[in-house]
Length: 141
Image 1 (cartoon, rainbow, N blue to C red):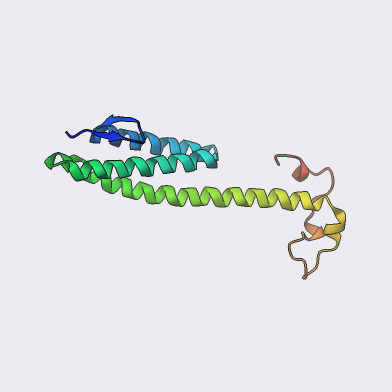
Image 2: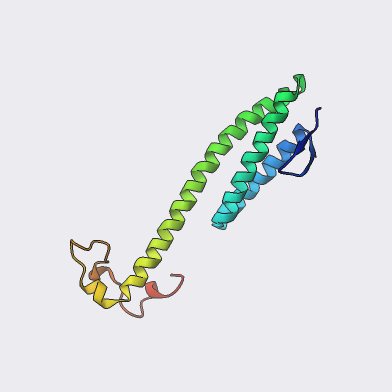
């Protein structure tokens, strides 16, 4: 099997090592998603992409020995698409959480809440404001 220098892994690698690095990084990506660590998930997605690019470079140089890796390439293409969707969902979730926190913070200003109108739809409807002391206003609720 041909060995190439991996810039991502900073060592000589063959197809088996690149495949394992991709699997390990892909698994780490989903662990970061579970903990909602957007920065780590993004970095791991980029690492997966770079390892996969290096694997494609390795495959282009390999002769018949590439056969066992062709199915893996197809799987990696599908997981790359799934990571993209997952990352978009995580970003959306983070944006929604920040928006909810901002909206909740704004409700603390009674003047803003009392002056909501159709001309200022970004202001929260006062009837939707939880009462003072409500568990909804507690941090982390």
